[in-house]
Length: 206
Image 1 (cartoon, helix red, strand yellow):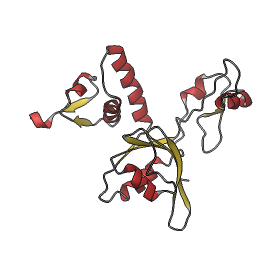
Image 2 (spheres, helix red, strand yellow):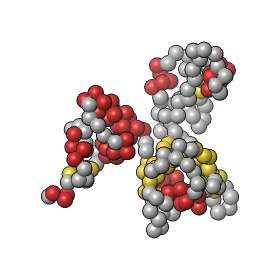
Image 3 (tube, rainbow, N blue to C red):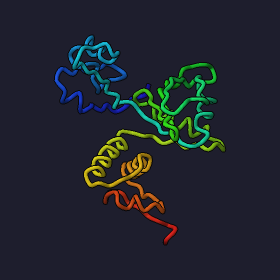
Image 4 (cartoon, rainbow, N blue to C red):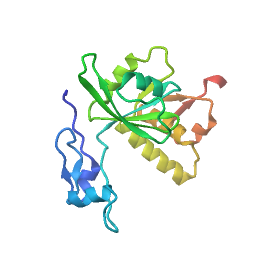
């Protein structure tokens, strides 16, 4: 694997008992002081008040949209994905022509988008491969990186605080535009009430 910049999760810094994981998950916690108890909690076998969680903030996330997304992913991976129901999840592999493992995907579909979690540092290369395999299919690949996730969290909190109503997918679109410092071209007036950081242009009225 190529060299990648190490980022350290805020949870690793602030939560008591956090123990850093080894490669390839350095920068996040392997556990928070009691791995056996945390595992039981994650398995649903913990006692009253037990809770467990896994910090996956170091993992890359790709958002794939378009009506052909599942049949397209089905044709490119080892998993049968054409019938994946909304809310369901699956594991899949991308292999080279000689059978070498290139990417491991954990994915779920929400009915309009497929969300793909990948190993740390591999999202850009997977996105490049998928882009090269689009051909004429109705799919779109976006790298939902840490900047987009942070922008989404801040935008959602801001909208809730100010009582601004924005559909979940529209909020993701706005967050991605903010993260990329891009201009969002749309006729949807709902975006104009979001916040100053989001630059919106309506070319239809120009």
